Amino acid sequence: MNKIDDAYQLARERYAEMSVDTEAALKKLSTIPISLHCWQGDDVGGFEDPDRGLSGGIMATGNYPGKARTVAELRQDLDMAYRLVPGDHRLNLHAIYLESDRQVERDDIEAKHFAGWVDWAKENNHGIDFNPTCFSHPLADDGFTLSHHDEGVRQFWIEHCIACRKIGEYFGQELGTPAVTNIWIPDGYKDTPVDRRLPRYWLNDSLDKIFTEPVDRQFNLDAVESKLFGLGSESYVVGSHEFYLGYAAANQILLCLDAGHYHPTETIADKISSVLLYVPELLLHVSRGVRWDSDHVVTLTDELQAITQEIIRGDYLDRVHIGLDFFDASINRVAAWTIGTRATLRALLMALLEPMDQLRAAEQKGDYTTRLALLEELKGMPFGPIWDYYCLQQDVPVGVNYISEIRTYEQQVLAQRD
Ligand code: RNT
Ligand code: ZN
Image 1: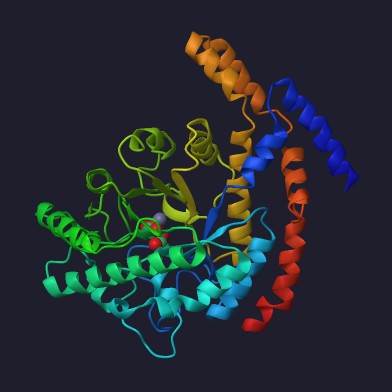
Image 2: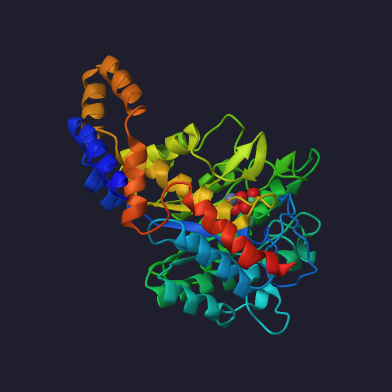
């Protein structure tokens, strides 16, 4: 353990020479919540109906043993993941993770179906975020929900989304921190449509109906999530980027930027400072697309670093909500959460360890030589010891030690499930 302290002291001095205060960076990092998505724990299955498969243009591949089959198992797995990640973090829930002893239709869900989650969140100091589930349902099977040509189908999903906003409000009231309730729908066409206008007209109309319902912004923040394409909606997605950017700006609600929802070479980092001029706040779905919107576990990539740099450099922490969105069923699911969350926190820490005053001064003077030199030097700075020290300070496993804890958990808990 002393080695970690020693390495930290040396690293701290190196950063101090660059006028970077590592203590301040760690203090800041400890205040940034990441919203861990419940759906990594069971491959987006949910507990509404075990016979309902995942649909809606998203797919989890793999069959790693030990997936959570009940709410209790999912919470147990989440508890394990939170123990392996430094800091206090949030939970991102989907409506299909409700608790009820009878089948509840989606337009009938209420706060009481999530009271167990609230008790658990209170015990563990988690805020909760929320999502209507507008997929994996017979009324979504033809690929359309809020933009459906049939008024009855649209109304069903409108009522589901209103119910979810009220549940978000309940989370905010109970937990003292607003829930971000994010609407994503799978609506779109596999093949080239002739009418791109009408579904967007209906989606706009449905959203207006959903958001007219009064819900207190102090407790619930509404977000909308766009997408470029999905499996089975390759040719046209109703809720495109332009659609929701316009909708969020016009209605002053949150826009959700999912890292996997754009052209493969298009990154969300550069969108943040533009969009935040026009929408009040952002929700990020931090994900990793590999060739397509494949929702791979987030790792410490250049793209992830670009995202966290934008948040920190732009001083946007109070306007950007960071959520994770990936689902890999081919590896240990607790490890997937742990690796993805730790990668996101590491990227945030790296961004917090930049000599921003010097970099900005160089840029504003037109001294791009110094800017380039500094940015290159930063890549070789002793970031690792600062991260290790933070893990030690926060009482979570240092380095790859978390893997042995996951292995033990796998043997003692996960292996008993099959
Ligand atoms: C789908 C969206 C959406 C989902 C979750 C499960 O492409 O990214 O956020 O991943 O709602
Ligand atoms: Zn997403």
